[in-house]
Structures are given as structure tokens and as C-alpha cells.
Image 1 (cartoon, one colour):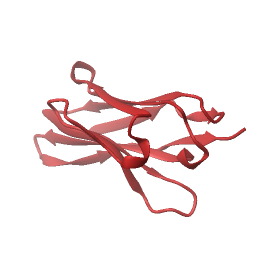
Image 2: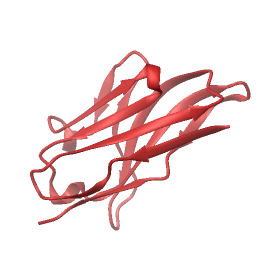
Image 3: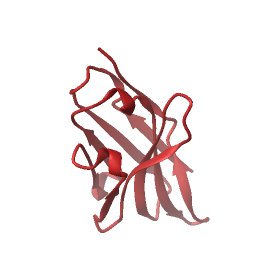
Image 4: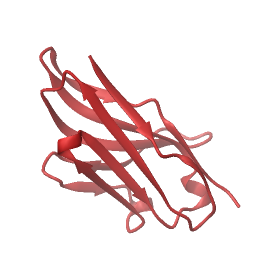
Amino acid sequence: QVQVVESGGGLVQPGGSLRLSCAASGSIVSINGMGWYRQGPGNQRELVATISSGGITNYVDSVKGRFTISRDNAKNTVYLRMNSLKFEDTAVYYCYAHIETRLGVRNYWGQGTQVTVSS
């Protein structure tokens, strides 16, 4: 069994910063790609950032230069550092991890963490 647990959301003023964390645990053989999606009010879920097992990163244009994704493979954890936050970054943020177990390979998802940017 695999669990993916997020933490680090909250309320922040425009221009502020937050760091989200997402840790995978359980019967893990290996973790391939990891990343973050978000879903704002009235919006579809949007891919925000991804990171490969080798550390290659990709970002949606709207967060480039402000957000940084990283991972600690020893801890099976992915992070999302968010700087210069804007009102439009308000959303529920979901992490995923592409995990291999003895039963196969698939994406596992966190429960979501709320990020609210408000003055």
C-alpha cells in the first residue's frame, strides 16, 4: 500500500511565499516522475510543475521564475517553493507521484492542500 501526503498550504498575502511538501511512503520499489497540479475556483485542474527522477523540471508558463519544484529521492518527497504569489495562484494544490510497486506502476495522488492568496 502506498500513501501520498501533502503539507504546507495556507493563507498568504500577495507577494508572499509558501513551500508545499509531498511525501510518499509504503511498499515503493521506485518513483519516477513527480509533480504538482492545481485547481482554482471554477477552473479545470492545471499542471503546474513536474520533475523527473533525474531532476529535469518543467513549469507552466504562468509560474516560471516564481515557483521551484525539487525532490529529495532519499525521502521520497517532492517540494514546491512558491514565491511572489499572486491572487490567481489561489487553488487546491495536488501532488502526484508515478510509483512502481510489486503490483505495477501508476500515479498516486495526494489529498490536496489549499493555498489562498489574499490581502
